[in-house]
Image 1: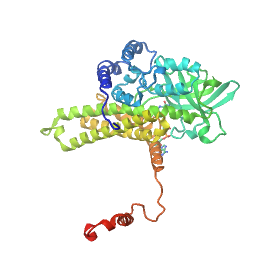
Image 2: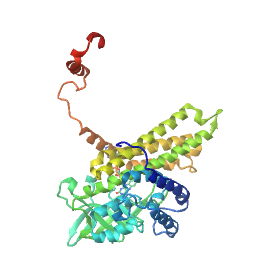
Image 3: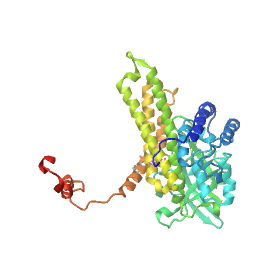
Image 4: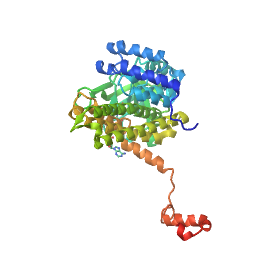
Length: 430
Ligand SMILES: Cc1cc2nc3c(=O)[nH]c(=O)nc-3n(C[C@H](O)[C@H](O)[C@H](O)COP(=O)(O)OP(=O)(O)OC[C@H]3O[C@@H](n4cnc5c(N)ncnc54)[C@H](O)[C@@H]3O)c2cc1C
């Protein structure tokens, strides 16, 4: 059967277990602990490790990875079905061993790391004993990597890195960073940069400040300066000049995983919206009986379902082709669609809760801010729409005629040439 929208009943049992476990054991962590990336914090160790052990015992740990890396090799569709539950909680991805950006960074290390690097960084990363950071964006602009200026210059058996990076998430907790720097300044633009592993403790790595959102105070998005940072020559991942190839390995997975978790976030807002409108009365009826409210429920349900199907189909395509590059258009489409779905659903949920919805006693303002996060992290929406459009237009050919191919007089002319002699009472038929 080529088209099947049902979940295999055996895996559904796992999903039911995950849903209950996340709701009762994991979601409360969001309210008593700080960052899931603070893996050395004694409270995190005390509360998170036993839950991770339960997940491992149930064989649901790091499901996106193959068995050779300690995962189950479930692929992206099963991961999507899991992530649309895990996305309800900040801690759930960490408890299940599939948190960004470590998933993407682990994929890079698995693909391109030396045996020694895999032992030193990949294994502890997969075991969540350490976390990692992806350090690419620069203060002068993130959407256009061709204006990055950070350099890594070869000096004997070392690379010497100089430059500044902006919004390197979780750098303050990370054991190592993957840094994008110009190593081949004279090569064509897309072959100038390389990805390098930089251990966090390397002299010359300086976090200037940790930027936060809104009024949160210190956040976790580091503004970093690299001054004469020296790393061994083998710390380049992939070929020198191959940063864009390596980035696709990382970002393709990262983007679709965010999308899977976004379904959960939007669904949470939707569930709260539905509960509220059938509970709250105004002007003699429940909110749910007012048509303008019903429209918000219907629009939200449709948007979530449309998005979910796009995500699942893209996950299925990744499993089928096992190459993110082939599925670039679909991943870009998912990435472009995701902020809008979360924004619109969360904004409606906020609005339907009235003043309570806007207050800091409900999660909606945080979700609306998150939608902007999704529209920027891993590249702004506009850039992904451009990718979709370019890829789509490659499938079309221009018309060499003055009028379009589907200009009706032309279409009719061909139709009559083909079938006209078989039509009786031609004048009445048209
Ligand atoms: C929550 C969060 C986490 C992040 N984590 C990391 C991280 O861990 N590591 C890392 O390296 N970076 C990270 N980033 C940075 C992210 O990759 C950049 O924010 C993103 O690439 C955009 O770059 P910029 O912020 O410099 O915006 P700019 O490049 O200045 O773009 C600003 C705006 O200009 C418009 N624009 C840009 N290009 C185009 C175009 N081609 N066509 C039309 N309009 C355009 C868009 O509206 C865009 O939002 C993170 C960002 C966020 C918000």
